[in-house]
Image (cartoon, one colour):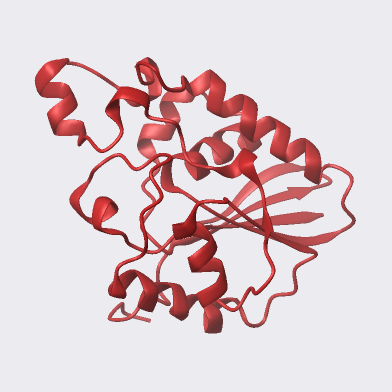
Length: 195
């Protein structure tokens, strides 16, 4: 059995305003730092074989503030490359391109969902030979949704139905009977959230 814990990074100015934040390396806001710190107590009882992080600052910073001082920087778990849509909101994109859907159309000069799924598949292959236990991955909203799709063998369009808040914890489980979504978008540990 292998549990893959995933954590979306804490809030940034761009995530707060809904701007697509792919490879632009923006820092956490103070509230994003507080959300990242709240992960420490939430994850304290878990033991991880390995901790991975996107090499982007917002994910690494989240990992460090959550108490993971030496996460393995992993380029495969970086956020979707939004190309021409970097820094643009979905509303602004649809004003120029009515009917646009990230999960179907991808991003001009950036990645398609097939590209992102291929990265997710390569990352999961790295985990295939690990012994029983848990790993944790600090990454980004859209990439983690694609990772879940790939892990669970779900169709592309299902990604649009998976909400994922900043600093949310999710768990994908590989066991003898197959692959399961054990937990999704857990935010009960966040400051100001009901327990």
